[in-house]
Length: 144
Ligand code: DQA
Image (cartoon, rainbow, N blue to C red):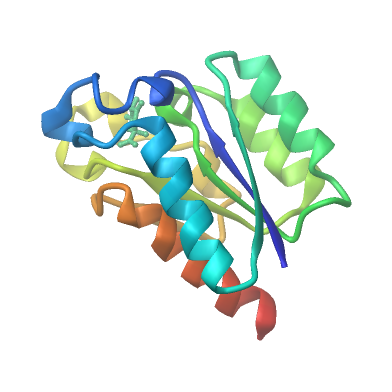
């Protein structure tokens, strides 16, 4: 099983940005945590982060044929990007949407998620552990 973990805009600022919402772990901490978790389960994982919508679309397209699952936190593009939704639909790779914060308890503009329309699962409000729950979900989903 091979998964791609994609993080969108400002997630490279983890540990610095709004710790009350996103905690104190850095992006590197997050990557290392997921790598260790996947390593114990013999799951191959690659990582990508970009602040640019088109680069995220390109990466999702490149994943076609190369990955069994995608875990994506599109950051603010969650609430605006039909292009990311269409990219996930285009490749047809089972995709889990993750948010570190509990978006459903935040501002009205965060209540819309385009990517959710193509996601097989959404995980919110569990901090960075949410990515590990997404791995768990994909493992079960893909092996059933
Ligand atoms: C986020 C929530 C989004 O609303 C926000 O724009 C982010 C991070 C989260 O992980 O909680 O950048 O996706």
